[in-house]
Image (cartoon, rainbow, N blue to C red; front, side, top):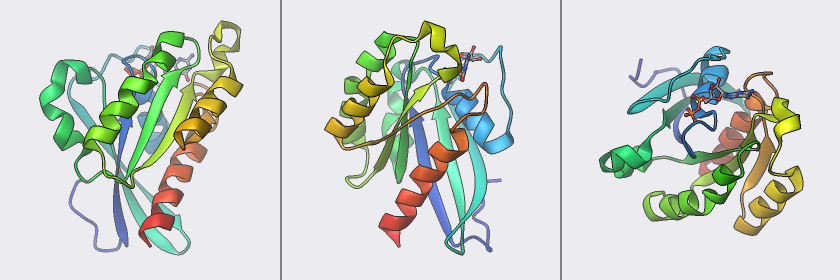
Length: 177
Ligand code: GDP
């Protein structure tokens, strides 16, 4: 539920952003429920998932907001980012266009997000290595240039998903405590 749990020390709101179809919903379901959906439909509106994580003896409730079709729902943008401490910016390593879009997403993040928002850049779908259009090195260099953390994941194979979320949540914890 969305009521704040008495036993949790912190509630961290994080948002997932990136072009439609990059795999945001599957990253969210993998992290919150350990599920992968092959036939997943683009999310309409906002999906919110929760998970409790223990970091350095503190119990953290991560509240992760996911959405697709933000272009179609401009009105939700400011409420989407409001109070967010972390953002996972996702592109699909098999579609260069989603990498090119990062600039636009960063612009939106900097317009609507908190100044000290922790941003982690994620290159998704590494199981589709044969269709790769963005080299790992390019992602890494881009992230360094923009001052972001970077990781490549596969929600399908469950590779690095946990690590990516944990990196984001640990960074937030380090900043806020
Ligand atoms: P969203 O629009 O960003 O939320 O993207 P979805 O999570 O709905 O995923 C879009 C499509 O990509 C779906 O068909 C997913 O099954 C597929 N997909 C998502 N993650 C992966 C992945 O890690 N590997 C592969 N092969 N497909 C994925």
